[in-house]
Length: 184
Length: 170
Image 1 (tube, rainbow over the protein chains, first blue to last red):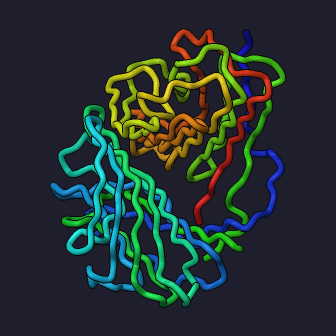
Image 2 (cartoon, rainbow over the protein chains, first blue to last red):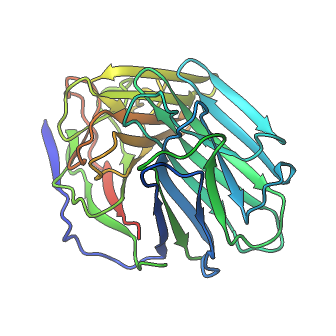
């Protein structure tokens, strides 16, 4: 039977679409306590954050903050995750209510970065609370997590700022996040 | 600010006959992430995992953590030091009917980090799963090979489609 090879050329005809890149942040030498996307345009229907990262601490969780709101009771998150041995369900309404993913820690396999795709849905709608969903995790060749997450921000304001930060420590150098807008 | 159109189809195909491997080669390094979408029309032999390799690397350079539900049990699995990566959980052998798989190759062309690939695999009326794969190489990904059994003798059915997209950050 044949092997189908497809030449993936950069010259394939490009088409315009409604998915646009807004901004990219890459962490430099020394790390960063957080990364933020601010002054987010109001011209899209949905937002998506795509990124890779690891932390400089001994703690895996990654948090999301919207409009610089640090009040944990304004968030609620649910997660379904697996650690390679078992599947777990988690609900958080207080300290860890802003969980969005897990990244490798400082002592994990060097050069192994976690990845996450975060959808911020209907972010301009002032008639409802905002919902964030995430898919991601990391693997370090003998450990790691696969992670689904949904986070509620109990605020009807339009989202103008998104911050990603680790639960403790910094995001490591070469962590990189890109914000995209999707028109509707 | 906005850099214009960003989500670009790079290549696509529909199988006109059964094939053992679906490959994308000479992938441009000009994007940030790649997204592969597979709509599998059927397979010759049920039960195998849906696997992939990159850059034709057949070494023990892959590992993964999975999460899947077969309708009875939610389970998490792991492979370490593997010669392949995969789309679905350990309990998601590909059935002979249709199924859908996606893979997100994150930051695939950077020369600094190992490569993480987020996948999903959905089989109607059967199972759903997601895997975080790691390819332990800092090389840019320039080709992708998708296959079933490790001997690469089982086939994807005619009518199977595969599309590769590039996402370019500002």
